Length: 295
Image (tube, rainbow, N blue to C red; front, side, top):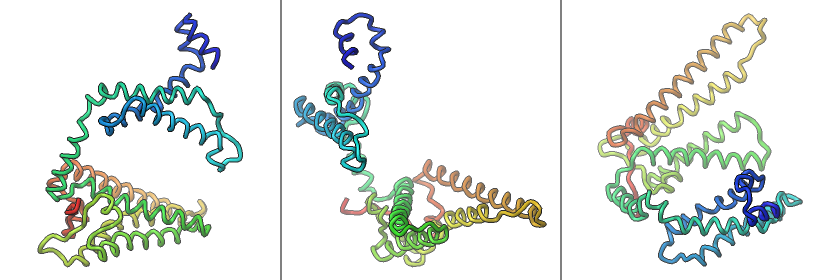
């Protein structure tokens, strides 16, 4: 680095400076905290000053360097990178540059008040569009998957059938029992601040909720069943049933591909027309969603 700094100060052969091996790492060290400066200007424009930005940028950069030199705070028994003062200077400089050029960048985006006003209108309207519903389902599934990951790691469980039934039980508890007992709320709907409700004149809520869960879980169950069939239904080529086995796997994989394609088309269609279309599991059961009044 010292030779690079010397060449920069002397000022000869600028193109050689750009080609120097230390140029790109230095440039990236400037860029790494540049978004932080823009972010601070966007959210704290009334209170943030250059001095405070220098302090924040330096503190964040120092956190990076300490993390590296301590081996991720003792997880590794040696540093995985060196503590570099140049990185501190360049990271801090990048944060300040981002703070100073933020007005030019933010001119391309809406002010922070505009999204808040739009969100307020959406909450007042009450009706939940398709995307939050889909995200809530994804959140619920990943919560179950994370719990299983922790559970299997602690108890050293590596068995496909146990994983399948454990996740099935978790999804049943999270997507049926929890909304049934909490008045239409799952972890995903709580995060996204809406509640599942039953349309007037439809099925009783318990029955509708159970049918909705069956509709949600069926593609996931079929996918796991098809996976088991293709994984374990293997025969020797000399077996009398080998040809039958090959055709069975082709049919199974073809059916699963067809289901995936249909689900993808259905999802895209609903997301593109959220005001006029519903997901199949909501339309078939009369379940809809409303934003919570306290939001």
